[in-house]
Length: 338
Image (cartoon, rainbow, N blue to C red; front, side, top):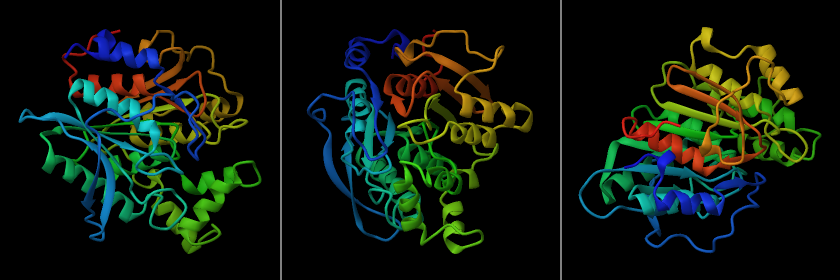
């Protein structure tokens, strides 16, 4: 492997195609134009350990016996297992001979069985088991990647499945369903509040069963410095404003939950950056991270096993940056420094 910062023809082809995905949480893509999934990705069914039902996924398994890494890509809030946002990740996996699976985990987040339920998480874990049974998976190099609703699910999976994932690359995630429910009320994004109520069983009144459900389905309930997975958390500084729906405070709070108290970003800085969309003087990231392509990295913190990046963008995932972090985390000795 040559490292993604000194990538061979596969990386350059993907970079030329864009590898920046921007969408509404419902799933419309703005910058993705290729027509088909790569050859070798197939529609499969596996049995969920949650309830014994057959569940769908898209899957690519490497041929041969040499153990190779696995990427589990999780669809966004309103999507299902055929969500197109996983195609750049799948293409890279096919080119680099990495295993890939994109499960349904109960589809759109509009009903109790979805939205971070125990069944949805059991589906994700069972998808990993299917991949390990049907392809040469290196169990020490399994990664979960997701954005928006997929970022919410990735945070949950990585924190609630100890020993399964080496790392999680998470983009514009929802980390607190109770807070997000309130943030979306009486805004153009109020439908997401309705989705949360539908999945959790009603209005989120203080102390209600619905609120308890929302707490139980929120990553912040489980994220803590003892979680052994490595995290790459990313947010566009303009998210949560205008058409974008998820304030960057969700990413800050997820990062702060994962690191020691002395390494956390102070609340007043989180509030200011979320509201004003700017980085305080003296805290700006001054290096160039080429994996983020035309999106400048504005702010970065690293501590313990976690990294937080705020970039010049909105509600989007930069697939080249996600893949760069995943590859360098899988093979740190072989990654080329920027």
